[in-house]
Image 1: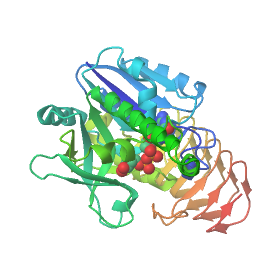
Image 2: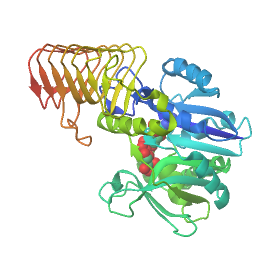
Image 3: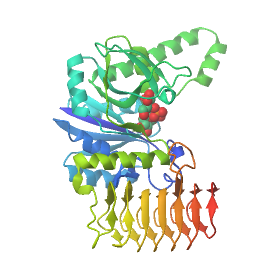
Image 4: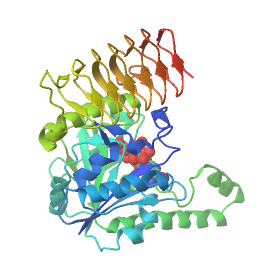
Length: 410
Ligand code: GDD
């Protein structure tokens, strides 16, 4: 049997995702019309002998209750949310729930970071892992040398694929091969995490018998004793010990820390639907339906006027109303938004219950890597008729009655 664990973090993480994370936990923010974590869960469904999926985080339980029960029913696989009382780190969180995770005596445990977007080649990873016969195999990818320092950089043996060297977000360049935040482990991972605790206790005892002065300086700077990071505390020390191996993907992979990246990842998932879920992509026949260009998702409850023109890379959520002559390009329109006649939305995310007036424009230059590269309207923002909003972030409940550019509207 195999189980999968998805680390979803909590409200104190994901702060760069504001204002979109104000009322929806980031893992449930829709990409290509489905909650972020839905893409992980449906990838896990492709693993044979999958017994269960756990989401581990420190968000309030009620925020996940509805989602977890509906996805369990839809995909016919038990999905359960396990709430930490406080953050324990990426490995500490896993360890905290070890008894529940190994209840079914799984031979393998997948561990996935929630804030990554990828094709999740999990069955291929498992096959490679069984061939290497180590304790764990991690998904890795080559990125540009300039961007590598935002991730865990690593060196692997080109022939055996063994992880030889691992360093988390180094200041000086080590390698353009990076950690994707997707792993498969044998249950021995729990012994390795236990080893970190034992080491820490031994060190603390050693310090206790040395000077009081140095003990004080250590306790001031060190992390809580039950906080274990998978990267620094496990991967780095265990590299080069024939325990950890790498599986390189040549498919798409991105990290989702900012709203801009969610727009880019929405495009990646929409284009993946062509192969995995073509029924989710909108088709327009040009007469009864709106004109559709490229990959577009439209929720069945949305009402779109037949003269609207939509795409590429557009996701339209539940109960959205799109008026006559509206043009939507590269955007995410969240639940209950109203877009009136002849409005244009381009490179933007429109928050829940917002309303855009006639002939208004909400737009940006579409540079996903800069803070104001896409326009974001928080929940219940009103843009009045003929107003143009360019490269802005607008916090919830604002009324915009004059054109604005390059501004954060608080
Ligand atoms: N449940 C829980 N509890 N989840 C956590 C906790 C915690 O205490 N801390 C982090 N997470 C979750 C986050 O939500 C995220 O999905 C994942 O664990 C990793 O988060 P971080 O530890 O903050 O690391 P990171 O995202 O900056 O970088 C990691 O992922 C990169 C790939 O996206 C590292 O492993 C990098 O090496 C890697 O390149």
